[in-house]
Image (tube, rainbow, N blue to C red; front, side, top):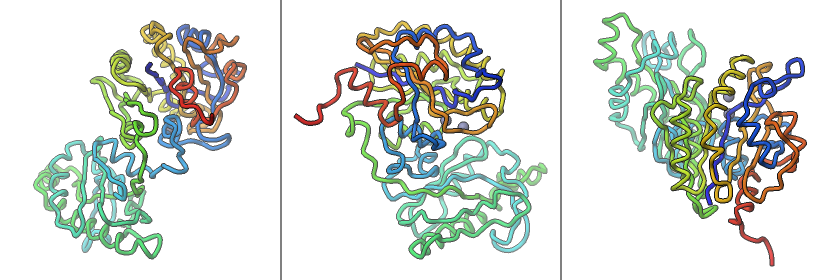
Length: 405
Ligand code: ZN
Ligand code: ZN
């Protein structure tokens, strides 16, 4: 009895002249889903709380983000494939170009992306050979990005070494409380050794010769400590699969013990291969209990404040929903929703509740016939919390346990 959670990241909007991309777009299949389902609106975290995509996805999978959110570092690290253990401290990182004399902290950042360097495999390998008192691991992320995980440094109460702007010196990692002092020392030792290794690395000497900026420092931000998180299987007795091209969402899937899939052609932007993603999700639905299919583009387009772009993407997305509508809803449960709103008028995530439709034989089908921000609140689900979404689906599938006698 599998559940397909179809999450259109940041899709809902605030009205512009009374209209939103969801009311303007021609999307017969999405509307069909609303028509045959039970509808409502959802506060993915809480009314008035602007969700991150990571915190909201945790909530959608039934995990209280206030209890289980690790900060972005560990989620990104898990998303690029590092196996994290409770207590591991992870940073997001980027290769940067620094100039000047002395220690790395005396040098000035002149390019936070090191000329948007792409080939960082050899640099990462060299960094992983650094001799440090504690165990650590560096892994590549996309482009100039990376993650750094320290094991056994016990505290993530650590400041950033990334000054965030060019023209400023690399920051020393500051302990944010007394117990983080030793951890900060280790991070700073890593920063200095990393600079020494990178600055003389053949790849960088080669770049210098070609007039390219050297990727001669690694800047750290977003420290977080991995928590003890019950696995999805332990929590529900079910297997989870996540289909996404976005490291952050893949990371959420990983830290709750899910399996993560990125089909070829999935890009995490509006050019993504929607057919490949649909096929991957529907395939997994035959093997897994819960499949979360994540589509990133609407959020990106919302950040770009592009109303017409959202309409256009939505219409394209709608054209790929046939196979989802062909599912046998006596056996499968379909949830269609979003992790938050990213209104084009704001260009950021907002707390405006999102539309949600649930389709399964036995749902109390309501009068809602269109999937929009305005129609959804008239549906039978009324207003729900993100953390309750999966429980509602599992109850519909008779997979819930009774509370009490
Ligand atoms: Zn999001
Ligand atoms: Zn976003």
